[in-house]
Length: 293
Image 1 (cartoon, one colour):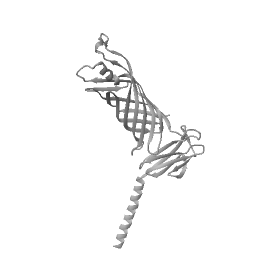
Image 2 (cartoon, helix red, strand yellow; image 1 turned 120 degrees about the horizontal axis):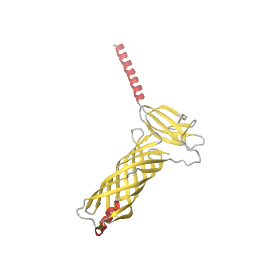
Image 3 (cartoon, helix red, strand yellow; image 1 turned 135 degrees about the vertical axis):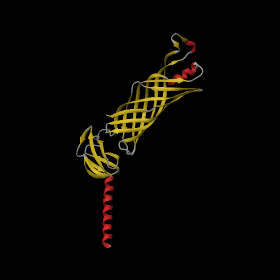
Image 4 (cartoon, helix red, strand yellow; image 1 turned 30 degrees about the vertical axis):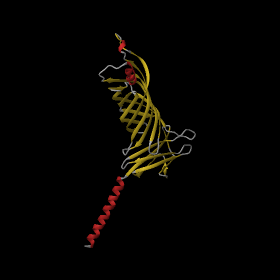
């Protein structure tokens, strides 16, 4: 009887050890650290993980899943620190751009293209109209990105070279000249410029960030003014009026990092507002491809 009990106890201990080893293995991940200077890989630079010296770059090792602080120090370079999350049974490769001492230790510049279409409505007193806004050409995004411990931020400029905006008014009466002048502040064709402040925060999925942006801008457009007293062969009114309409766009979505040089932005939520007695709201999702330079 005692022999049976001992064998059961030994088997239980072996199972516990085996389970513990399997659990630890399931929580392990691979971490690879590579350092670069102007896209040229550096070797011999010291790498620290959570303050402990682990070796020289390029370095790779097996670590437990979790959040780590990786620091690189080398003679002639600024010290660089990056905080990263590593998921179980995944391989996380970190590429750190080392900046030589004497040069500004800042983030990196980016350039990209984006495209969006806005659909919504305009409101003028008791008159409501649907509205469409689009660009036959993609916009150009330029700016710079600054990494942070938990939140990255980007500051840039979005240039829409040619935007077409027009409402469909559902009014039961003709617009007066003053009402038409107000209504057409949101309509017409022309370029649109906007500054952009974008914040990025990591989510649990590797290489995916939640992204939100704030874009104050101006729509430089020409438009037609309806004049019921000027209805002739050539039409009603004139189309040589020019105006700058201020806009405000809020976006929210995801950013996908395909390596360290390509970023794909997908803004599923986008709201564009303009208000100059004629108030409009547009649902304006967008997609962008950004390259680091």
